[in-house]
Amino acid sequence: MTDAPSPREMIDMLWEKLDDSPYALVGIPSQDAHSEPMALKFDDDFPNRLFIYTNTDNRLTQGMATDPNAMIQFAAKGHDFFACMKGTLSRVTDPDMIDRFWNNTVAAWYEGGRDDPKLAMLCVELQHAEMWEADMSMGGVIKMLFGGKVDESEMGHLETAM
Image (tube, rainbow, N blue to C red; front, side, top):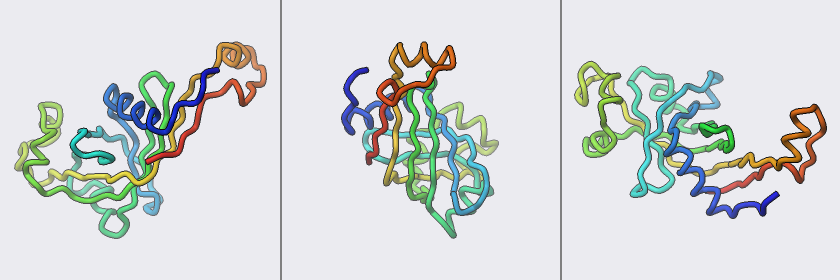
């Protein structure tokens, strides 16, 4: 097994994995409701911030008025990296920010385009994250395939950061 990545390496890995597949489950824990799949937008100009296009009657948009605390669960495309992130939701009203990530995929969801009255853009300012790199050793993989017990030394890495 290789040495555990540093916190900085894990954070860099998170952004790389999100860039490859920017889909995650987002929810407000106090709502006692299931998280929803969302496409996350992000940019190096806004460190530790994720942006979400949604609509005004979405439970995230509605719920953040009473509780802005969000949880985001992410599984990388290859299932080799996982993250659970905590942050604060806020509404983005700046037209330049709404335009920044706008593309044909986003536009397909809004009949009225950028001026659709139901369009809402949210920002999650990340405060904390736990990230797991699933880089199980070959011995651990073989044990797992045949029902053997996988030792802790053969498992991936956990890092808490942000």
